[in-house]
Length: 173
Image 1 (cartoon, helix red, strand yellow):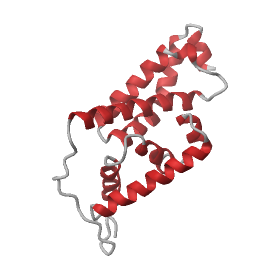
Image 2 (spheres, rainbow, N blue to C red):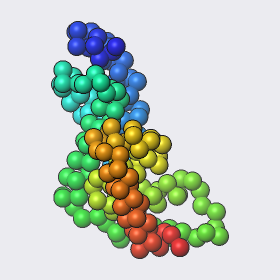
Image 3 (cartoon, rainbow, N blue to C red):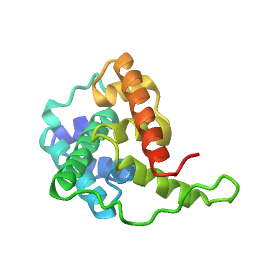
Image 4 (cartoon, helix red, strand yellow):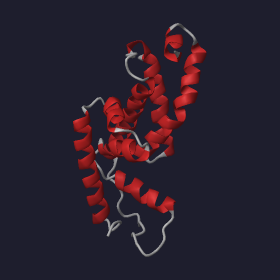
């Protein structure tokens, strides 16, 4: 309804969409970029691109899935550009995982976020969508425009790579 209102010239309708989806888009972008400024830029860029392409929106899909996909792509592009510009700095000390010591949820989240940076550019998105956003395979398939079977295989590969990265760095036993 809001998209139709935007297409009819109602500028306040798009403001409602931005207000409604800015939080989820920022959160998804942040999980991928690991930088607040980059996440803000990715979310803003997604809104601009969505607005520019609003006439191409397919009403048989959910608006959220469509704009979420744009935001994920923007965040992945930022990470790719950053990786091309500089190598990851592995010299920063990271606390090792000690199963006996009780680590805070924040410390575990930081380890996960650092590990996600070591994955192939498309892998963090699928992990974030499934395990952090809690989306179903069907929802992920719609957002990433992939068959569900492909989503499952890519998620398996991403999990395996994540596990390997975390073990190599001593963050998992």
